[in-house]
Image 1 (cartoon, rainbow, N blue to C red):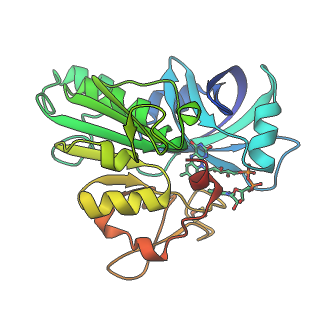
Image 2: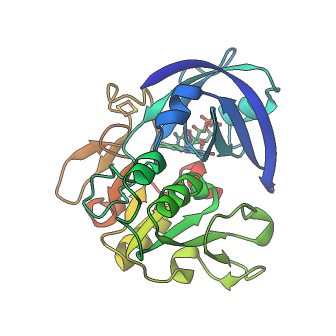
Length: 272
Ligand SMILES: Cc1cc2nc3c(=O)[nH]c(=O)nc-3n(C[C@H](O)[C@H](O)[C@H](O)COP(=O)(O)OP(=O)(O)OC[C@H]3O[C@@H](n4cnc5c(N)ncnc54)[C@H](O)[C@@H]3O)c2cc1C
Ligand code: FES
């Protein structure tokens, strides 16, 4: 885990009100894996850092995707190129793409050194709703490095709310109102695959759990510290008790989470 003083180096709009911010963060860019997140802080800013999945990595830079849903995200989006931002990460557990579950080969460089192959011929579906697209470009990069065939499934309420960027061998769009692609949600639009990764509103993850109990889902909770100390990110488990999304998560086997006890009203969810 690194604590970096970084600069904002880029900003682009990828959907209605949906922005990608690029940040210079070499040590995090070199080590982050799909599903992990960074906790961002800035001054003047909120007392607590705000967690964001890493969207893409380009050289020494990382990207996050966000919308203005409150005080912190509004401030982030009003910052200018060159402004300083504090990046803590990479945090949390990544998606596991290798057959062994160890994910050792999911890092592109390691996969290349190993001659790829461990995922060759396997299919993976990356299923996202709204801002749940956040961890998917990195997941696509890792899956391609492993030789997998990637189906990218992305849904939103309506065409303008879709994220315009996609990284699949096949791409399936879904909109609730049928304005683009499949009329319905991304879970319903997705094909079955050897491996399924899902990120989006918690109610969407619950639907994914019903269809694919073994899917890996990246859950959304409130967070405080992001490092396992404050217990502010509790995720209720089917076996009883709680995990910390920032430490044991945010990636879980879909059927392991007690979806009925996890809030489905968070704003990150509502924007999907
Ligand atoms: C592991 C993880 C990864 C995330 N990745 C992304 C991402 O890639 N892109 C993105 O846009 N958002 C992401 N989020 C959610 C993001 O952290 C919240 O949108 C952000 O904290 C809201 O901050 P704010 O100051 O703008 O909102 P606030 O002014 O604090 O609150 C506005 C609204 O957002 C809700 N909210 C506050 N904090 C959170 C939170 N941590 N999660 C969900 N809802 C919250 C509040 O209930 C309130 O309704 C992620 C959250 C987690 C836990
Ligand atoms: S956010 Fe503090 S323990 Fe997870």
